[in-house]
Image (cartoon, rainbow, N blue to C red; front, side, top):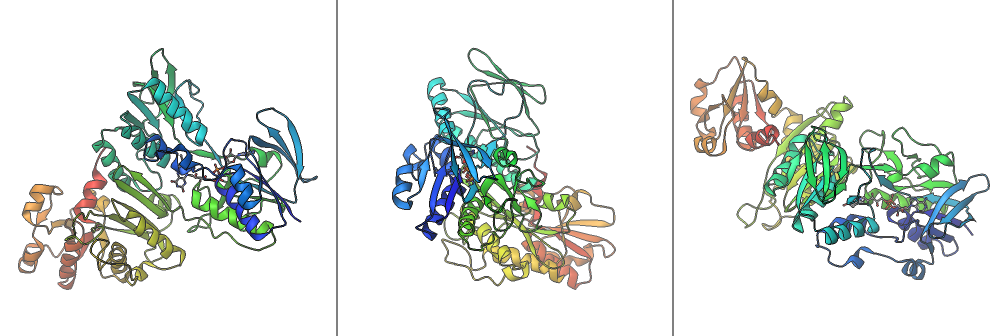
Length: 550
Ligand code: FAD
Protein backbone atom coordinates (compact mmCIF):
# COMPACT_ATOMS: atom_id res chain seq x y z
CA UNK A 1 0.00 0.00 0.00
CA UNK A 2 1.49 3.33 -1.06
CA UNK A 3 1.23 6.18 1.41
CA UNK A 4 0.98 9.50 -0.39
CA UNK A 5 1.24 12.86 1.31
CA UNK A 6 0.15 15.93 -0.61
CA UNK A 7 1.15 19.42 0.46
CA UNK A 8 -1.36 22.04 -0.70
CA UNK A 9 -5.02 21.36 -1.26
CA UNK A 10 -6.04 23.53 -4.18
CA UNK A 11 -5.47 23.24 -7.94
CA UNK A 12 -2.49 20.91 -8.25
CA UNK A 13 -2.83 19.19 -4.89
CA UNK A 14 -6.53 18.41 -5.08
CA UNK A 15 -6.24 17.21 -8.70
CA UNK A 16 -3.45 14.85 -7.67
CA UNK A 17 -5.37 13.55 -4.66
CA UNK A 18 -8.51 12.82 -6.67
CA UNK A 19 -6.55 11.19 -9.49
CA UNK A 20 -4.52 9.06 -7.07
CA UNK A 21 -7.68 7.72 -5.51
CA UNK A 22 -9.24 6.99 -8.90
CA UNK A 23 -6.17 4.92 -9.73
CA UNK A 24 -5.88 3.10 -6.43
CA UNK A 25 -8.36 2.12 -3.75
CA UNK A 26 -5.49 0.91 -1.57
CA UNK A 27 -3.31 3.99 -1.42
CA UNK A 28 -3.35 5.95 1.81
CA UNK A 29 -3.74 9.59 0.77
CA UNK A 30 -3.32 12.52 3.14
CA UNK A 31 -3.78 16.07 1.84
CA UNK A 32 -2.38 18.84 4.03
CA UNK A 33 -3.52 22.41 3.59
CA UNK A 34 -2.30 25.23 5.75
CA UNK A 35 -5.37 27.38 5.09
CA UNK A 36 -9.01 26.80 5.99
CA UNK A 37 -10.19 25.92 2.50
CA UNK A 38 -9.31 23.27 -0.04
CA UNK A 39 -10.16 23.09 -3.70
CA UNK A 40 -11.52 26.63 -3.87
CA UNK A 41 -11.88 28.60 -7.08
CA UNK A 42 -8.99 31.08 -6.86
CA UNK A 43 -9.76 32.18 -10.40
CA UNK A 44 -13.28 33.10 -9.31
CA UNK A 45 -12.27 35.40 -6.44
CA UNK A 46 -12.39 38.70 -8.42
CA UNK A 47 -15.84 37.80 -9.70
CA UNK A 48 -17.24 37.53 -6.19
CA UNK A 49 -15.77 40.94 -5.35
CA UNK A 50 -17.53 42.30 -8.44
CA UNK A 51 -20.81 40.65 -7.47
CA UNK A 52 -20.98 38.56 -10.65
CA UNK A 53 -20.67 35.43 -8.52
CA UNK A 54 -23.23 36.28 -5.88
CA UNK A 55 -22.73 33.31 -3.55
CA UNK A 56 -19.41 33.03 -1.73
CA UNK A 57 -20.10 29.32 -1.29
CA UNK A 58 -20.02 28.85 -5.05
CA UNK A 59 -16.24 29.35 -4.80
CA UNK A 60 -15.86 26.40 -2.45
CA UNK A 61 -15.80 23.48 -4.83
CA UNK A 62 -15.04 20.82 -2.21
CA UNK A 63 -14.89 20.61 1.56
CA UNK A 64 -12.70 18.23 3.59
CA UNK A 65 -15.87 16.22 4.25
CA UNK A 66 -16.96 16.02 0.60
CA UNK A 67 -13.42 15.08 -0.41
CA UNK A 68 -13.40 12.35 2.21
CA UNK A 69 -16.79 10.99 1.12
CA UNK A 70 -16.03 10.93 -2.56
CA UNK A 71 -12.32 10.15 -2.62
CA UNK A 72 -11.55 8.76 0.82
CA UNK A 73 -8.77 11.30 1.19
CA UNK A 74 -7.72 12.30 4.70
CA UNK A 75 -7.85 16.08 4.33
CA UNK A 76 -6.30 18.10 7.12
CA UNK A 77 -6.83 21.85 7.00
CA UNK A 78 -4.91 24.40 9.08
CA UNK A 79 -2.04 21.94 8.66
CA UNK A 80 1.21 23.39 7.43
CA UNK A 81 4.09 21.15 6.44
CA UNK A 82 7.09 22.88 7.97
CA UNK A 83 9.88 20.37 7.28
CA UNK A 84 10.72 17.35 5.18
CA UNK A 85 13.15 14.74 6.42
CA UNK A 86 14.10 13.02 3.19
CA UNK A 87 16.28 10.42 4.91
CA UNK A 88 13.51 9.19 7.17
CA UNK A 89 10.80 10.03 4.59
CA UNK A 90 8.84 11.96 7.19
CA UNK A 91 7.19 15.39 7.14
CA UNK A 92 6.65 17.66 10.12
CA UNK A 93 3.18 19.11 10.24
CA UNK A 94 2.24 22.16 12.28
CA UNK A 95 -1.33 22.81 13.32
CA UNK A 96 -1.46 26.52 12.55
CA UNK A 97 -4.25 27.11 15.09
CA UNK A 98 -2.68 25.39 18.10
CA UNK A 99 0.97 25.56 17.07
CA UNK A 100 1.37 21.84 17.82
CA UNK A 101 3.66 19.83 15.61
CA UNK A 102 3.66 16.16 14.70
CA UNK A 103 5.24 13.89 12.12
CA UNK A 104 3.81 11.77 9.35
CA UNK A 105 5.71 9.31 7.18
CA UNK A 106 5.33 9.01 3.40
CA UNK A 107 6.24 6.72 0.57
CA UNK A 108 5.61 9.42 -1.99
CA UNK A 109 5.36 13.12 -1.31
CA UNK A 110 3.80 15.69 -3.61
CA UNK A 111 4.39 19.41 -3.21
CA UNK A 112 1.80 21.77 -4.64
CA UNK A 113 2.32 24.84 -2.45
CA UNK A 114 1.61 27.36 -5.21
CA UNK A 115 3.04 30.85 -5.50
CA UNK A 116 2.74 33.76 -3.11
CA UNK A 117 1.84 37.31 -4.16
CA UNK A 118 4.93 39.50 -4.35
CA UNK A 119 4.98 42.19 -1.67
CA UNK A 120 7.80 44.59 -2.45
CA UNK A 121 9.68 45.96 0.56
CA UNK A 122 8.41 49.51 0.15
CA UNK A 123 7.64 51.73 3.15
CA UNK A 124 4.10 51.19 4.43
CA UNK A 125 3.49 47.93 2.56
CA UNK A 126 1.76 46.49 5.63
CA UNK A 127 -0.61 49.45 6.03
CA UNK A 128 -4.28 48.92 6.71
CA UNK A 129 -6.51 48.49 3.66
CA UNK A 130 -3.58 47.24 1.58
CA UNK A 131 -4.26 43.75 0.25
CA UNK A 132 -3.13 41.00 -2.07
CA UNK A 133 -5.58 38.49 -3.48
CA UNK A 134 -4.68 34.83 -3.41
CA UNK A 135 -7.31 33.02 -1.39
CA UNK A 136 -10.72 33.20 0.26
CA UNK A 137 -9.51 34.97 3.43
CA UNK A 138 -7.80 37.63 1.26
CA UNK A 139 -11.05 38.14 -0.62
CA UNK A 140 -13.03 38.30 2.64
CA UNK A 141 -10.65 40.97 3.96
CA UNK A 142 -11.04 43.05 0.80
CA UNK A 143 -14.83 42.80 0.94
CA UNK A 144 -14.87 43.64 4.67
CA UNK A 145 -12.68 46.69 4.07
CA UNK A 146 -14.98 47.87 1.29
CA UNK A 147 -18.10 47.39 3.35
CA UNK A 148 -16.65 49.09 6.45
CA UNK A 149 -14.78 51.98 4.86
CA UNK A 150 -16.85 52.49 1.72
CA UNK A 151 -13.86 53.76 -0.28
CA UNK A 152 -14.69 56.04 -3.21
CA UNK A 153 -11.32 55.33 -4.76
CA UNK A 154 -9.06 52.28 -4.95
CA UNK A 155 -5.63 51.75 -6.41
CA UNK A 156 -4.65 48.53 -8.12
CA UNK A 157 -0.91 48.05 -8.42
CA UNK A 158 0.05 45.82 -11.34
CA UNK A 159 -1.69 45.26 -14.67
CA UNK A 160 -1.50 41.48 -14.94
CA UNK A 161 -4.68 39.45 -15.20
CA UNK A 162 -5.44 39.55 -11.45
CA UNK A 163 -4.90 43.33 -11.42
CA UNK A 164 -7.11 43.85 -14.46
CA UNK A 165 -9.86 41.62 -13.08
CA UNK A 166 -9.77 43.61 -9.84
CA UNK A 167 -9.95 46.93 -11.74
CA UNK A 168 -13.13 45.72 -13.37
CA UNK A 169 -14.53 44.26 -10.15
CA UNK A 170 -14.00 47.49 -8.22
CA UNK A 171 -15.36 49.61 -11.05
CA UNK A 172 -18.42 47.40 -11.17
CA UNK A 173 -19.21 48.08 -7.51
CA UNK A 174 -18.93 51.81 -8.02
CA UNK A 175 -15.36 52.50 -6.92
CA UNK A 176 -13.16 54.76 -9.02
CA UNK A 177 -9.89 53.00 -9.78
CA UNK A 178 -6.33 54.06 -10.48
CA UNK A 179 -4.19 51.36 -12.08
CA UNK A 180 -0.46 51.71 -11.55
CA UNK A 181 1.75 49.73 -13.92
CA UNK A 182 5.51 50.02 -13.77
CA UNK A 183 6.10 48.93 -17.36
CA UNK A 184 4.80 50.54 -20.53
CA UNK A 185 1.89 48.10 -20.84
CA UNK A 186 -0.57 45.92 -18.97
CA UNK A 187 -0.86 42.15 -19.69
CA UNK A 188 2.81 41.27 -20.04
CA UNK A 189 2.24 38.12 -22.15
CA UNK A 190 1.00 40.18 -25.11
CA UNK A 191 2.87 42.81 -27.09
CA UNK A 192 2.45 46.53 -26.56
CA UNK A 193 0.19 47.18 -29.55
CA UNK A 194 -2.21 44.42 -28.46
CA UNK A 195 -2.10 45.70 -24.88
CA UNK A 196 -3.03 49.11 -26.31
CA UNK A 197 -6.49 47.73 -27.09
CA UNK A 198 -6.80 47.00 -23.37
CA UNK A 199 -5.45 50.44 -22.45
CA UNK A 200 -8.13 51.92 -24.69
CA UNK A 201 -10.89 49.99 -22.91
CA UNK A 202 -9.56 50.94 -19.48
CA UNK A 203 -9.50 54.62 -20.42
CA UNK A 204 -13.01 54.39 -21.92
CA UNK A 205 -14.16 52.93 -18.61
CA UNK A 206 -12.71 55.92 -16.75
CA UNK A 207 -9.86 53.94 -15.17
CA UNK A 208 -7.08 56.30 -14.17
CA UNK A 209 -4.43 54.32 -16.05
CA UNK A 210 -0.87 55.24 -15.16
CA UNK A 211 1.71 53.35 -17.18
CA UNK A 212 5.45 53.57 -16.45
CA UNK A 213 4.48 54.41 -12.89
CA UNK A 214 5.32 52.43 -9.78
CA UNK A 215 4.32 52.63 -6.15
CA UNK A 216 7.18 53.65 -3.87
CA UNK A 217 5.53 54.23 -0.48
CA UNK A 218 2.23 53.97 1.36
CA UNK A 219 1.47 56.35 4.22
CA UNK A 220 -1.46 55.67 6.52
CA UNK A 221 -3.33 58.87 7.32
CA UNK A 222 -6.39 59.01 9.62
CA UNK A 223 -8.96 59.06 6.81
CA UNK A 224 -7.17 57.48 3.88
CA UNK A 225 -3.92 56.19 2.44
CA UNK A 226 -1.46 58.45 0.73
CA UNK A 227 0.54 56.78 -2.00
CA UNK A 228 3.86 58.04 -3.26
CA UNK A 229 4.45 57.18 -6.90
CA UNK A 230 7.73 56.65 -8.74
CA UNK A 231 7.32 60.01 -10.49
CA UNK A 232 7.10 61.77 -7.12
CA UNK A 233 3.35 62.37 -7.32
CA UNK A 234 1.09 61.72 -4.35
CA UNK A 235 -2.21 59.91 -4.65
CA UNK A 236 -4.99 59.70 -2.09
CA UNK A 237 -6.80 56.39 -2.01
CA UNK A 238 -8.99 54.28 0.24
CA UNK A 239 -7.87 50.80 -0.75
CA UNK A 240 -4.79 49.28 -2.35
CA UNK A 241 -4.73 45.96 -4.17
CA UNK A 242 -1.23 44.66 -4.81
CA UNK A 243 -1.16 42.50 -7.91
CA UNK A 244 2.41 42.76 -9.12
CA UNK A 245 2.97 39.08 -9.67
CA UNK A 246 3.65 35.90 -7.76
CA UNK A 247 6.72 34.09 -6.52
CA UNK A 248 6.93 30.28 -6.31
CA UNK A 249 6.73 28.96 -2.74
CA UNK A 250 10.00 27.07 -2.57
CA UNK A 251 11.07 27.51 1.07
CA UNK A 252 10.00 24.04 2.15
CA UNK A 253 11.59 22.39 -0.89
CA UNK A 254 14.86 24.27 -0.68
CA UNK A 255 15.15 23.73 3.09
CA UNK A 256 14.85 20.02 2.32
CA UNK A 257 17.72 20.31 -0.15
CA UNK A 258 15.59 19.82 -3.26
CA UNK A 259 17.09 21.37 -6.34
CA UNK A 260 15.67 24.66 -7.60
CA UNK A 261 15.79 25.65 -11.25
CA UNK A 262 17.29 28.64 -13.03
CA UNK A 263 14.04 30.58 -12.82
CA UNK A 264 13.68 30.04 -9.08
CA UNK A 265 10.98 27.38 -9.16
CA UNK A 266 11.29 23.81 -7.91
CA UNK A 267 13.13 21.81 -10.56
CA UNK A 268 11.19 18.80 -11.86
CA UNK A 269 11.63 16.33 -14.69
CA UNK A 270 8.98 15.46 -17.29
CA UNK A 271 7.35 13.11 -14.79
CA UNK A 272 7.06 15.98 -12.24
CA UNK A 273 9.72 14.32 -10.06
CA UNK A 274 12.01 16.63 -8.09
CA UNK A 275 15.69 15.89 -7.51
CA UNK A 276 14.46 13.35 -4.92
CA UNK A 277 12.77 10.46 -6.77
CA UNK A 278 10.15 10.03 -4.04
CA UNK A 279 9.16 13.69 -4.02
CA UNK A 280 7.08 15.22 -6.78
CA UNK A 281 6.12 18.86 -7.28
CA UNK A 282 3.52 20.57 -9.46
CA UNK A 283 1.76 23.86 -10.13
CA UNK A 284 2.86 27.44 -9.60
CA UNK A 285 5.82 26.36 -7.46
CA UNK A 286 7.63 24.49 -10.23
CA UNK A 287 9.36 25.45 -13.40
CA UNK A 288 8.59 23.41 -16.46
CA UNK A 289 9.81 23.57 -20.01
CA UNK A 290 8.40 26.15 -22.35
CA UNK A 291 6.59 24.53 -25.26
CA UNK A 292 8.29 26.56 -27.98
CA UNK A 293 11.81 27.08 -26.67
CA UNK A 294 12.21 24.03 -24.39
CA UNK A 295 13.75 26.43 -21.87
CA UNK A 296 12.73 26.38 -18.18
CA UNK A 297 9.78 28.68 -17.53
CA UNK A 298 7.59 29.79 -14.65
CA UNK A 299 4.03 29.95 -15.93
CA UNK A 300 1.57 30.13 -13.03
CA UNK A 301 -1.74 29.06 -14.52
CA UNK A 302 -4.52 26.77 -13.37
CA UNK A 303 -4.58 24.47 -16.43
CA UNK A 304 -0.94 23.43 -16.14
CA UNK A 305 -1.30 22.94 -12.34
CA UNK A 306 -4.27 20.63 -12.87
CA UNK A 307 -2.62 18.60 -15.62
CA UNK A 308 0.61 18.30 -13.69
CA UNK A 309 -1.25 17.13 -10.57
CA UNK A 310 -2.83 14.33 -12.55
CA UNK A 311 0.48 13.29 -14.10
CA UNK A 312 2.28 13.33 -10.74
CA UNK A 313 -0.44 11.10 -9.26
CA UNK A 314 -0.06 8.66 -12.14
CA UNK A 315 3.68 8.49 -11.66
CA UNK A 316 3.53 8.21 -7.88
CA UNK A 317 1.45 5.11 -8.48
CA UNK A 318 3.89 3.53 -10.87
CA UNK A 319 2.87 4.85 -14.27
CA UNK A 320 5.23 6.70 -16.59
CA UNK A 321 3.34 9.78 -17.79
CA UNK A 322 5.13 12.82 -19.14
CA UNK A 323 4.12 16.45 -18.85
CA UNK A 324 4.29 17.94 -22.30
CA UNK A 325 5.50 21.44 -21.56
CA UNK A 326 3.56 24.67 -21.06
CA UNK A 327 2.34 26.99 -23.80
CA UNK A 328 1.08 29.75 -21.51
CA UNK A 329 -2.36 29.86 -23.08
CA UNK A 330 -4.30 32.52 -21.17
CA UNK A 331 -7.27 34.84 -21.41
CA UNK A 332 -8.51 37.82 -19.45
CA UNK A 333 -11.87 39.57 -19.50
CA UNK A 334 -11.70 43.34 -19.56
CA UNK A 335 -15.19 44.74 -19.20
CA UNK A 336 -17.03 43.72 -22.42
CA UNK A 337 -13.80 42.62 -24.08
CA UNK A 338 -11.27 39.82 -23.93
CA UNK A 339 -7.54 39.61 -24.51
CA UNK A 340 -5.93 36.21 -24.96
CA UNK A 341 -2.65 34.71 -26.03
CA UNK A 342 -0.76 31.48 -26.47
CA UNK A 343 2.91 30.75 -27.05
CA UNK A 344 5.46 33.50 -27.32
CA UNK A 345 5.07 37.20 -27.79
CA UNK A 346 7.18 39.13 -30.22
CA UNK A 347 9.06 40.82 -27.39
CA UNK A 348 10.00 37.52 -25.75
CA UNK A 349 11.23 36.13 -29.10
CA UNK A 350 13.22 39.31 -29.63
CA UNK A 351 14.79 38.87 -26.18
CA UNK A 352 15.86 35.38 -27.19
CA UNK A 353 17.20 36.53 -30.54
CA UNK A 354 14.87 34.17 -32.36
CA UNK A 355 13.84 35.00 -35.95
CA UNK A 356 10.11 35.50 -36.45
CA UNK A 357 7.55 37.18 -38.70
CA UNK A 358 4.12 38.41 -37.73
CA UNK A 359 0.84 39.19 -39.44
CA UNK A 360 -2.30 40.94 -38.22
CA UNK A 361 -5.89 40.46 -39.31
CA UNK A 362 -9.03 42.18 -38.01
CA UNK A 363 -12.03 40.19 -39.30
CA UNK A 364 -15.43 40.08 -37.62
CA UNK A 365 -16.05 37.42 -34.98
CA UNK A 366 -18.95 36.32 -37.18
CA UNK A 367 -20.57 37.24 -40.49
CA UNK A 368 -20.82 41.02 -40.76
CA UNK A 369 -24.42 40.88 -41.95
CA UNK A 370 -25.54 39.05 -38.82
CA UNK A 371 -26.27 41.53 -36.00
CA UNK A 372 -23.64 42.12 -33.35
CA UNK A 373 -20.50 41.37 -35.32
CA UNK A 374 -17.37 42.86 -33.77
CA UNK A 375 -13.79 42.63 -35.03
CA UNK A 376 -11.28 40.25 -33.57
CA UNK A 377 -7.80 41.70 -33.82
CA UNK A 378 -5.55 38.71 -34.27
CA UNK A 379 -1.77 38.66 -34.31
CA UNK A 380 -0.02 35.53 -35.54
CA UNK A 381 3.70 35.08 -34.89
CA UNK A 382 5.63 32.41 -36.78
CA UNK A 383 8.98 31.22 -38.03
CA UNK A 384 9.56 33.07 -41.33
CA UNK A 385 11.22 30.09 -43.00
CA UNK A 386 9.42 27.00 -41.75
CA UNK A 387 6.06 28.50 -40.79
CA UNK A 388 6.20 27.01 -37.27
CA UNK A 389 3.60 28.74 -35.12
CA UNK A 390 5.40 30.57 -32.33
CA UNK A 391 2.50 32.44 -30.76
CA UNK A 392 -0.76 34.25 -31.18
CA UNK A 393 -2.64 37.09 -29.52
CA UNK A 394 -6.22 38.22 -29.92
CA UNK A 395 -8.44 41.03 -28.72
CA UNK A 396 -12.16 41.42 -29.26
CA UNK A 397 -15.52 40.70 -27.73
CA UNK A 398 -16.93 37.26 -28.48
CA UNK A 399 -14.92 34.42 -29.97
CA UNK A 400 -11.47 35.51 -28.79
CA UNK A 401 -11.20 32.36 -26.65
CA UNK A 402 -12.16 30.11 -29.54
CA UNK A 403 -9.53 31.52 -31.89
CA UNK A 404 -6.69 31.37 -29.38
CA UNK A 405 -7.76 27.88 -28.34
CA UNK A 406 -7.73 26.68 -31.94
CA UNK A 407 -4.29 28.19 -32.38
CA UNK A 408 -3.06 26.59 -29.13
CA UNK A 409 -4.23 23.19 -30.39
CA UNK A 410 -2.62 23.80 -33.78
CA UNK A 411 0.67 24.66 -32.09
CA UNK A 412 0.56 21.59 -29.90
CA UNK A 413 -0.24 19.39 -32.88
CA UNK A 414 2.81 20.79 -34.65
CA UNK A 415 0.77 22.42 -37.42
CA UNK A 416 2.39 25.23 -39.33
CA UNK A 417 0.80 28.51 -40.39
CA UNK A 418 0.44 27.00 -43.88
CA UNK A 419 -1.92 24.41 -42.34
CA UNK A 420 -4.28 26.94 -40.79
CA UNK A 421 -6.09 27.79 -44.02
CA UNK A 422 -7.06 24.12 -44.30
CA UNK A 423 -8.69 23.89 -40.88
CA UNK A 424 -12.39 23.22 -41.23
CA UNK A 425 -14.05 25.16 -38.44
CA UNK A 426 -17.68 25.60 -37.46
CA UNK A 427 -19.58 28.17 -39.44
CA UNK A 428 -23.05 29.65 -39.43
CA UNK A 429 -23.59 33.43 -39.54
CA UNK A 430 -24.15 33.92 -35.77
CA UNK A 431 -20.90 32.11 -34.95
CA UNK A 432 -18.26 32.78 -37.56
CA UNK A 433 -17.53 33.20 -41.23
CA UNK A 434 -16.98 30.68 -43.98
CA UNK A 435 -13.39 31.85 -43.85
CA UNK A 436 -12.71 31.94 -40.12
CA UNK A 437 -10.35 34.38 -38.41
CA UNK A 438 -7.89 31.49 -38.03
CA UNK A 439 -8.15 30.52 -41.71
CA UNK A 440 -7.63 34.12 -42.69
CA UNK A 441 -4.61 34.65 -40.48
CA UNK A 442 -3.20 31.37 -41.84
CA UNK A 443 -3.70 32.47 -45.44
CA UNK A 444 -2.00 35.80 -44.84
CA UNK A 445 0.94 34.13 -43.09
CA UNK A 446 1.16 31.45 -45.78
CA UNK A 447 1.28 34.19 -48.43
CA UNK A 448 4.31 35.59 -46.64
CA UNK A 449 6.01 32.18 -46.38
CA UNK A 450 5.34 31.38 -50.03
CA UNK A 451 6.54 34.79 -51.17
CA UNK A 452 3.09 35.79 -52.47
CA UNK A 453 3.21 38.86 -50.28
CA UNK A 454 5.97 40.84 -48.63
CA UNK A 455 4.75 42.59 -45.51
CA UNK A 456 5.92 45.63 -43.62
CA UNK A 457 5.01 46.88 -40.18
CA UNK A 458 4.43 50.10 -38.30
CA UNK A 459 8.14 50.45 -37.48
CA UNK A 460 8.95 50.37 -41.21
CA UNK A 461 6.40 53.10 -41.89
CA UNK A 462 7.73 55.25 -39.06
CA UNK A 463 11.26 54.83 -40.41
CA UNK A 464 10.38 55.34 -44.06
CA UNK A 465 13.36 56.33 -46.22
CA UNK A 466 13.59 58.52 -49.37
CA UNK A 467 13.89 55.29 -51.38
CA UNK A 468 10.39 54.30 -50.30
CA UNK A 469 6.93 55.57 -51.29
CA UNK A 470 3.87 55.36 -49.07
CA UNK A 471 0.63 54.45 -50.84
CA UNK A 472 -2.80 54.39 -49.17
CA UNK A 473 -5.34 52.44 -51.25
CA UNK A 474 -8.45 53.25 -49.19
CA UNK A 475 -11.24 55.51 -50.39
CA UNK A 476 -10.66 59.24 -49.75
CA UNK A 477 -13.55 59.41 -47.27
CA UNK A 478 -11.87 56.81 -45.08
CA UNK A 479 -8.74 58.91 -44.84
CA UNK A 480 -10.78 61.94 -43.83
CA UNK A 481 -13.06 60.14 -41.39
CA UNK A 482 -10.73 57.58 -39.83
CA UNK A 483 -7.35 59.21 -40.26
CA UNK A 484 -4.29 58.61 -42.39
CA UNK A 485 -0.54 58.22 -42.14
CA UNK A 486 1.07 61.60 -42.86
CA UNK A 487 2.71 61.73 -46.27
CA UNK A 488 0.76 58.82 -47.78
CA UNK A 489 -0.36 59.22 -51.40
CA UNK A 490 -3.96 58.12 -51.83
CA UNK A 491 -4.95 56.04 -54.84
CA UNK A 492 -8.02 53.88 -54.14
CA UNK A 493 -7.43 50.24 -54.97
CA UNK A 494 -10.15 50.24 -57.63
CA UNK A 495 -8.36 53.00 -59.56
CA UNK A 496 -4.87 51.59 -59.12
CA UNK A 497 -4.67 49.64 -62.41
CA UNK A 498 -5.42 52.83 -64.39
CA UNK A 499 -3.09 55.02 -62.34
CA UNK A 500 0.05 52.89 -62.22
CA UNK A 501 1.97 55.62 -64.04
CA UNK A 502 1.71 57.78 -60.91
CA UNK A 503 3.86 55.30 -58.98
CA UNK A 504 7.67 55.34 -59.00
CA UNK A 505 9.31 52.18 -60.35
CA UNK A 506 12.61 52.98 -58.67
CA UNK A 507 11.24 53.05 -55.13
CA UNK A 508 9.86 50.44 -52.81
CA UNK A 509 6.15 51.06 -52.37
CA UNK A 510 4.77 50.57 -48.86
CA UNK A 511 1.06 49.95 -49.21
CA UNK A 512 -1.56 50.59 -46.58
CA UNK A 513 -5.32 50.15 -46.45
CA UNK A 514 -7.67 49.82 -43.47
CA UNK A 515 -6.96 46.24 -42.31
CA UNK A 516 -4.56 44.82 -44.88
CA UNK A 517 -7.01 43.15 -47.25
CA UNK A 518 -7.21 45.74 -50.03
CA UNK A 519 -3.49 46.30 -49.48
CA UNK A 520 -2.97 42.67 -50.46
CA UNK A 521 -4.98 43.12 -53.66
CA UNK A 522 -2.92 46.23 -54.43
CA UNK A 523 0.29 44.39 -53.58
CA UNK A 524 -0.47 41.57 -56.04
CA UNK A 525 -1.36 44.08 -58.74
CA UNK A 526 1.86 46.01 -58.23
CA UNK A 527 3.99 42.88 -57.93
CA UNK A 528 2.50 41.53 -61.16
CA UNK A 529 3.43 44.82 -62.85
CA UNK A 530 7.02 44.59 -61.68
CA UNK A 531 6.88 47.05 -58.79
CA UNK A 532 8.80 46.41 -55.63
CA UNK A 533 6.30 46.65 -52.79
CA UNK A 534 5.32 45.61 -49.28
CA UNK A 535 1.91 45.60 -47.63
CA UNK A 536 1.39 46.99 -44.13
CA UNK A 537 0.11 43.96 -42.22
CA UNK A 538 -3.16 44.74 -40.48
CA UNK A 539 -3.32 48.10 -42.30
CA UNK A 540 -4.05 51.48 -40.78
CA UNK A 541 -5.96 49.89 -37.92
CA UNK A 542 -2.80 48.16 -36.71
CA UNK A 543 -0.74 51.31 -37.32
CA UNK A 544 -3.21 53.37 -35.31
CA UNK A 545 -3.27 51.06 -32.28
CA UNK A 546 0.51 50.55 -32.42
CA UNK A 547 1.22 54.27 -32.36
CA UNK A 548 -1.49 55.13 -29.81
CA UNK A 549 -0.17 56.69 -26.62
CA UNK A 550 -1.76 56.10 -23.24
P1 FAD B 1 -2.56 26.96 -5.27
O1 FAD B 1 -3.83 26.74 -6.00
O2 FAD B 1 -2.21 28.35 -4.88
O3 FAD B 1 -2.57 26.04 -4.00
C1 FAD B 1 -1.49 25.98 -3.13
C2 FAD B 1 -1.99 25.71 -1.74
O4 FAD B 1 -0.92 25.19 -0.98
C3 FAD B 1 -2.45 26.96 -1.01
O5 FAD B 1 -3.78 26.85 -0.61
C4 FAD B 1 -1.50 27.09 0.18
O6 FAD B 1 -2.17 27.52 1.36
C5 FAD B 1 -1.04 25.65 0.34
N1 FAD B 1 0.29 25.54 0.96
C6 FAD B 1 1.41 26.19 0.62
N2 FAD B 1 2.44 25.79 1.38
C7 FAD B 1 1.96 24.86 2.23
C8 FAD B 1 2.53 24.08 3.26
N3 FAD B 1 3.82 24.17 3.56
N4 FAD B 1 1.74 23.22 3.93
C9 FAD B 1 0.43 23.11 3.62
N5 FAD B 1 -0.17 23.83 2.66
C10 FAD B 1 0.58 24.69 1.96
N6 FAD B 1 -5.14 30.81 -13.53
C11 FAD B 1 -5.71 30.64 -14.73
O7 FAD B 1 -5.25 29.79 -15.49
N7 FAD B 1 -6.80 31.38 -15.11
C12 FAD B 1 -7.35 32.31 -14.30
O8 FAD B 1 -8.34 32.95 -14.65
C13 FAD B 1 -6.76 32.53 -13.04
N8 FAD B 1 -7.27 33.46 -12.21
C14 FAD B 1 -6.70 33.62 -10.98
C15 FAD B 1 -7.23 34.58 -10.14
C16 FAD B 1 -6.68 34.77 -8.89
C17 FAD B 1 -7.24 35.83 -7.99
C18 FAD B 1 -5.59 33.97 -8.47
C19 FAD B 1 -5.00 34.14 -7.11
C20 FAD B 1 -5.05 33.01 -9.29
C21 FAD B 1 -5.60 32.84 -10.57
N9 FAD B 1 -5.08 31.90 -11.46
C22 FAD B 1 -5.64 31.73 -12.68
C23 FAD B 1 -3.88 31.11 -11.12
C24 FAD B 1 -4.26 29.73 -10.59
O9 FAD B 1 -5.17 29.88 -9.55
C25 FAD B 1 -3.01 29.02 -10.13
O10 FAD B 1 -2.16 28.86 -11.23
C26 FAD B 1 -3.29 27.66 -9.53
O11 FAD B 1 -4.17 27.77 -8.46
C27 FAD B 1 -1.98 27.02 -9.05
O12 FAD B 1 -2.24 25.83 -8.39
P2 FAD B 1 -1.26 25.31 -7.24
O13 FAD B 1 -1.84 24.03 -6.75
O14 FAD B 1 0.11 25.34 -7.73
O15 FAD B 1 -1.33 26.42 -6.11
